[in-house]
Amino acid sequence: MVVSDASALASGNGANLKLEPWLHPAAIVGLCLVVFVPLRLCLGGANYLPSRAWYLLCFIIPAFVLAGLASSAFCVPIQADWQTLLHLMAALVYMQLDLCVARLLCSPSSSCADWSLPQLVLSKLSCRPARLDGLSPPGLLPVARSLFELNGALFHEIFWNIFICQNCLNRGLPLPVALLAVPAASCLVHGIVSNINTGVRCLPNFLWVALSFHASGSVLPPALIHAMWYFLEAKLCFSLKTLKRDWDFAERKDECTTPPWDRTCSVGLALVLMFYLPLNVLVSLRPELHSPWMEEPGGCQFIEAFPHLPNRVNCSLLGLGFLQLFLGWWTWGTARAGMEVLAQSGDLTEAGVEAVAIAVEDYAKRHKILASHGADCYSGEDSEHSQESDS
Image: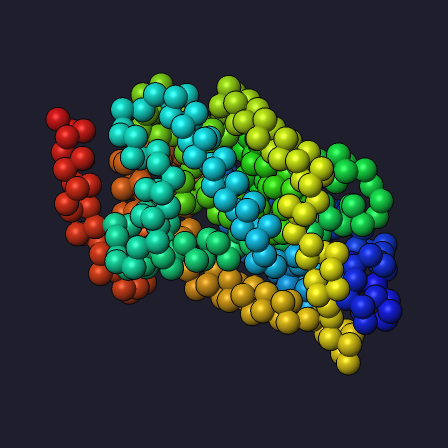
């Protein structure tokens, strides 16, 4: 929420807003174009999502958020109240529903456990080193990668939902315009840094986070949703065809780029609308289900003695943001070694992930990065599955 004058700073109420023209959502989207179009021209796109320009976007967006927070230009609703917890639980319920439908869409031969939300999430919270996933640095604990993804997702959802959606509402734009601004801007930017089909296929996901933010009044549920591409291994309906998988590789083996919008995207969009439109209507009828963080005096309360400095919440976010940028810089080479393979092949089958992981391990060996789980990372259960598939 854009910060107001001294009286609003003293009260901490976000109702009175100082709406600088340079903070207009259109200006922010324009900044994205100024940054990401040249980036695409210099670095190029990719056949599939993880282009170099896209991975830079993953850290440029947090940098934008840091600039907004450091200047106290925006207030972030991040209160861990019971309403936020309720909407986090609603998001998890929706995800399991989506996973069930997704399993029917692709009719995989894998067990139901592979499509169980608890099973998928808990495997990413382990404190024991696991096999390489093709993107994480060698030896990185799954829980560390999960925290990295959650932290990055939080900053992206602050950008799309506060800097764009809430900013539109603060300026008196109609609610449908504010909600649709999120998928419109996000799809445009992802289409620029990766490819057009990737941007279009992201529509259900970006509309989902916007509807979740409006229903909850907090950025925490959208952040959880955003991070689920990793936790749920891109198994939600809208992302089923983003990359080639074991269950559809035979029919897609000759495919050379991200496919256009198809039935999986339509089903994903329909599920989001059927679940989150009624939820938003319910919250409008029962406002107590909406987090009061943006409205109550304790919400956007800035330090009165230093009106131009960030509040405690923003200070904490600043620390997390700089940590995210540092980790991105530290892991850049290792992560990109795998992403370069995936961006061109789009192969997320077991064999594809193994090829990506080998590229990551080779990079780690060349640069003398600790790789304590290299050759052995495919032992045990994964090797058994590989032998079964070969037979």
